[in-house]
Image (tube, rainbow, N blue to C red; front, side, top):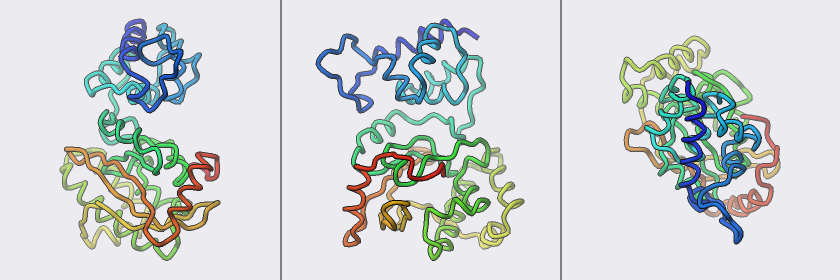
Length: 281
């Protein structure tokens, strides 16, 4: 563990990131070339005082905080691994909620300011959401292991299905299972994350077992969805996907389905913002 070096390294990365790189306004009176400490803290979801302690080498951040700092500072994969080593934390699994998000995907996410968007893994673990995605879908549940996957939540927790009308549940169940089968095959039989997820689903859900036995396979590249919002009612949207090179991450964004009135509702969503209209998903 080398916490002073961790703090120094984070400061060096903070100095090189321009506010515009992360969707912030530089303002007329900026005195530093990169980000201020309070801005890094805000982007990482930490208090300013806590981030100052980290930069001073006085705190050992958790794996979740390290992952959030890596995203806030747009670290490369090697740089992300470096801060985990300095903090004496184990590297997170590639498919977990602390997985590294490619800076290019984060850059695109920052530019999608008028549409809900988020980055998820091929096992449907949410890695990062923009403000409108939180407002539309709810904040992703804080969990680790198989429980972090929305597919696991879908088949084991009835509350997870409240996001969609009941009439659409069978469609989504089949789509989730077919997409998961494609991801499991792509990862291979020795991948621990996908194997554990399937095993847990088979143990917990008879519905999953039935659909899994049908061996349907289809990568979910796009979909037409009806989403139930607690204030705006049902919004019909097109869900589009942009995949990473290895297929393990995808950027999802939601655009209004033409002729449904969803466009006006999404405009209202920008006004409502990420108020706590939903419980954590």
